[in-house]
Amino acid sequence: MPSSSPEVPINAVFAKLLQDPTNTVARDMFGQIIEAIPSAIRFVLLNKDGQPLDVWRNSQAMTLLGEDQTIPLENLDTKQWARWFHPLDITPYQSVYADILHGDREKPFNQIFRILDQDTRENDVYEPGYLWISEDIMPIIDPSTHTLIAISSGLQDVTKIGKLAYLDPLTGLNNRSYVQEYWVTEYNRAKRDKKPMGILFCDLDHLKEVNDQKGHQEGDLAIIAVADFLKKDLRDYEMLARWGGDEFVILSRSDRRGTRKLANRLHIGLQETGLGLTMSTGFYSTRVDSLSSDPAEAYDILIRRADNALYEAKAAGRNCVREYIVPRV
Image (cartoon, rainbow, N blue to C red; front, side, top):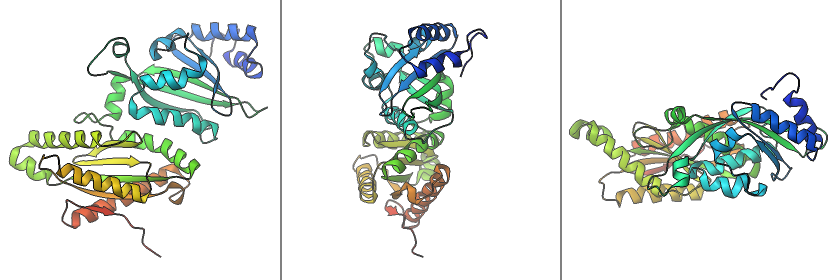
């Protein structure tokens, strides 16, 4: 947590607020302290059901996030924020709060999300612009009640860095690094709810021939066309990224049947676009708790199995769909 002047430690004042959120002296003092901090900072006090009990943020944070002091507290992180969030980031952001409440995240961590920039919020623009926000979060559980959770958030505009780190420059899709970040939240959610996760690896067929015969510019246009097709045909809970080269990856909240249906729909749909392009697809779906109790290890297993299924699709002559089947022992 950031520190203020030695005379009034921010930790001590905030501790008083945890004990008694109605303490007006402590509230006023805390507000003055965080307003004096030069960086954007926000503190959210939640109950065990995830509902905001109180929020403190300085003017820098309000400007950065576009928050309005007149918005009712209960709408702060739902209606208002959802309206400004990038569609791909709404669910992961909300899931973070669920992770904290269920004890899946107890140590300080960082997350990056996108919100509409000021020009897009205030004007009728054709193409929305987004800011990339880096947020440092420190969960604090009240030891006496185990019901109040305070989150200290250091916020920073990292738009230039975010675009380089998490976006594929050719297609504008998420990249492999974003998939790894996204997986942690989805793993915790699926494990907690005992739900399956599906993964698809889609590989554009014969891209090398396109590059050799027509040039790399035509190859890039083919990749962009497939990316646009996939993007339009997916739902909110299906995350698309360019894995690299001619490969795309999709994470979906689907069981085996739903993942197979998605793979076949995309396979047929691409052929019906008239682009003259086909792709090979490998998929796999399972309950994440069957993979590993460690999200990183579970991620490696999931990727490896989907990649094996893709290899089978290529070995079968391409332009087909294959599922990874766990060998029987």
